[in-house]
Each structure stands twice: as structure tokens, then as C-alpha cells.
Image (tube, rainbow, N blue to C red; front, side, top):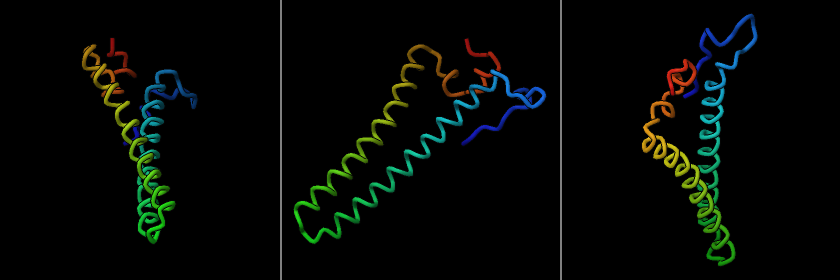
Length: 109
């Protein structure tokens, strides 16, 4: 999921600008991992609140709203990546988006 630093990225212990795509890829991957974990936690928590509400309409509405917002947030994040890949497909730059190494080596034009 996370990319390793290429040997060409470090020069005398100092990172070069050619490492920026690797850093960007790792940050985006970490963000997706975080969003997925938070969404899963919120869905499970709202399901527990839903089950333990004992028929109280106020608690049922709060649990339903929390679950809806967790699902909508997850759909928004995933659809943003789908739009990014769709734009890459339309502009024929999908290899630049999907293969971060091509950006780092200058093969993406």
C-alpha cells in the first residue's frame, strides 16, 4: 500500500524533489486508510446505538443520522477518486495517475 523510498531519492541524507510523488502517494494512501477506519468505526458505533436504543425515537433518529453521514462521507471520498480516474481516462493520462513511479522518473508527459 505504501511505497518505499527509491535509492535515487536520497542524496547525502537529504531528500530530493523527485521524491515528492512518493510522499504524495503515501499521504493519500494513509488518508484513505484513515477514512476507511473512521467510517467503519462510525458505522459499527451507530449500529450499536441503534440496537441499544430500546425503541426511543430520539436515539433511533440520532443513530440513523450518524450511519447515514458515515456512508455519505465514504461515498464522497470514493467518488472523488472515481472522478479523478475518470478525468485521467478522458485525458488519456491514467498511467500518470495510477503509476506514481512514472511521474517520479519523468515518464509522464
